[in-house]
Length: 544
Image (cartoon, rainbow, N blue to C red; front, side):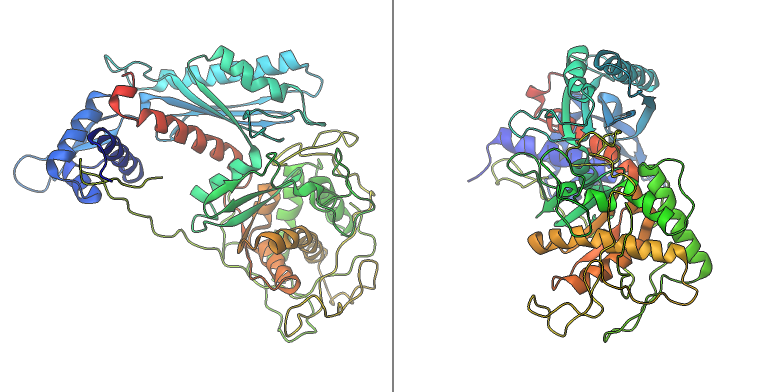
């Protein structure tokens, strides 16, 4: 069915704006070539978008040829400003950007654990208002006749906890500060002209990795967040899956072998969190004889992992492990050979040490998809821990305060991997090695404590990842959060090898390229998408 003229104009305008966003300034001729639209149709949409204050002439093209130069059109980035918040137990990170995502101002606001709900919310809101005012002062001069120039249009918030799928609000969760739930409502009251949205932080991290990070070439993958707590986000066929109650990815509550107890509905102690949360990682480092970080939080755990990787690399050991099966040992890729590490942001009782490890290569971004425009009448086009160890945790556990902190000595044991993969994967073959509590294989001569630490940590991570893989078959697992980024290709390669031995489903494991910054990037991307959905609408709905 052919598109109506108004629908065609709306689709063409949005397509042109998306191209200007992705490619930068373009001439009318380049827009014609990229959209496939006729010259009159392109001229019409350029006039409409210019009149609405969304695009403007930003320069000229063709300085090397004779005759008049072609005008370059670009998006007016200060048409609207966007705010992104990463809400953590101990404070808030805030940034404000223009419509193209260029950061104009930012701030970090610590909030003490003894602050009441009212004072805590006031601190956070005041920070948003201050950063927004700073960004407005940096904006280009307002354009006459365009309302809302340089104002805060959309606010995206990333927070730990469950998001109610019916209301979009953060649900009450034990172990998380009460001010988290009050923040969005207060922001909406204080910023009546802005659109305020809240999303689970791990989900936002996954969206950021999909758009800008390690999963750019993947439509289906799972992000396993490893930070202060643990969580997961699931993207299937390009769509983020939230579940019936918004709890998809509550992997911290996953019952796993190697813990002293089972988790409960209000406490993830005894679940996967007890093996891989920050407190468990820092405790494991101490058990292996590594220097203890200053704090058992996400950055502290990342410090321990980063130090272990550096020590292994310096020794040139490559985290070697014995192999008793058909595969020969393959040294793990060292940092720098795969993902690039960028600055980011449990007792071991009788666990057996893992087997052979292999490198994991990171994927590159796939080619961008092209869309076609619509000429009127021709048809339509398609488009785009809690801080206290006694308190219980909640959902989606991301960079900070993702549930109850595992206490040192609470019984998280290392989990053995199979000594050799059977010729044909299956569930009937008996395990070739003793289970938890069985005698581990002899340590290698001169085995580094750092190498042992990384092998056991990878063994633990693989236990939770294997459960996800068995159910979802995502083909790719991204190790996110501060710990995932700190482990880089070394830790990713070790986890991938364990998954290969535990599951018949081929799964690539990659290290995050965004780490602790992913939540803030995801919040900004979702705010930008929402703002553009409204601002890139037909002119008669823009109010400009």
